[in-house]
Length: 76
Image 1 (tube, rainbow, N blue to C red):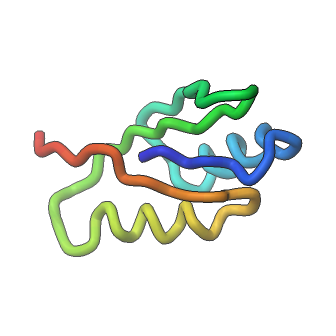
Image 2 (image 1 turned 120 degrees about the vertical axis):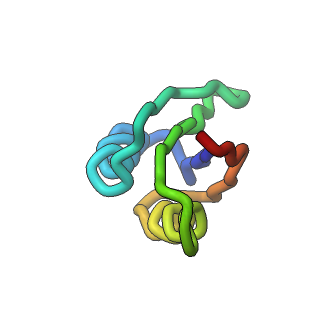
């Protein structure tokens, strides 16, 4: 999942909130352009109803989020 911030002024809070609320398996900063950095999150979730949809909805509710994109979905 890629989370784009609205602005970089509150990026540290967004990063902290994403870690606490979404509980990703892995989180990385991904430079986009002009000093903007996106959060790249990896999750391990069980197969079932609404797995990535629920995470996407939670991510969109975080403060300072401009957009959320599911980049890849794989099965273990």
